[in-house]
Image (cartoon, rainbow, N blue to C red; front, side, top):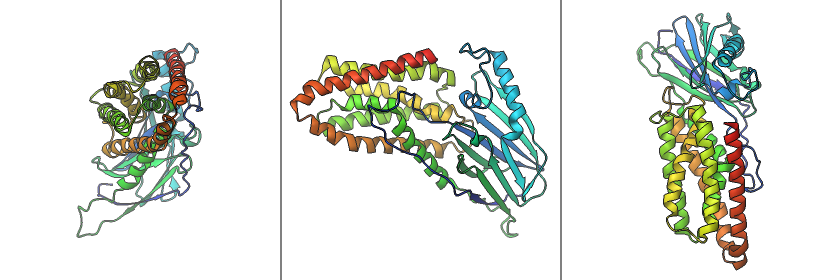
Length: 382
């Protein structure tokens, strides 16, 4: 294990990506956020393999009961009890085989910290081997669509390979080949292109199913009169949420899961209500909308960051730059695709006086009502 290996990755070919664009105003009343992302950092040490699994409390709640007295709050005693239950289940998290043979069960430690981040640590005894196979068994019992970001590292923490696993592609096989004698320091083969595309797709999927973000944009764009004002709105929103997405994910602005649930999500809903009401009382294409869009875009960026940061893909982990850039680019591509499809229709309809007189106000009322419903739901859930 002390040598620097050359790594070949083989992944189960069964993988599907379910991406769809719902009708904006006929979508689900649900919160409509990503089904979940957890991480597993696998480090190849001498004679052992250390695994650190990190997940959000909501994900842990799919495995064990957390709120035991059903009072809507998580006491320290309940969190400690949940950590103990996870520790008992920890040996079922991963199936690890060496050259086709399973070894002893791992040592397991689990904890839930003060900001409700969940960590499960596994230590597997590692005999001499050339093939390592890792299968996530928890993916089969977690919410459909949940993914596991697996990072394989050597003993010095150098990333050898990364994969985004799902229930349909839950296994990674690692082949360790001896290094040529004349290349003792040859670097391992890394696979950042696949992880980039995985997070790019995740970003597109998140914005296409993020009904709250889409409704906010719809409320802004339905009153725009021309290409210039539309581009100004989209650009301000993009710049603003990209700033806070990066700041939160890189931990320059720490955002805990509790703060995200109790503050960020209700504020996103409130921004939708405000836009709908402003359309009604100001009418037309309100001046200075770009400033409002930028301000609210900062809040929405913290919401986007929750997809990465609350599920442990953050500055504390490895290889954050590729997931961050790819996810943000995916959000932008998905956003542009939606705008390109919706704006021509809006501009065409705005040529009809009846649309301006009746349907723009009616759509603005729907925007405000949906935002108000989400606001009440999120404040109540928080």
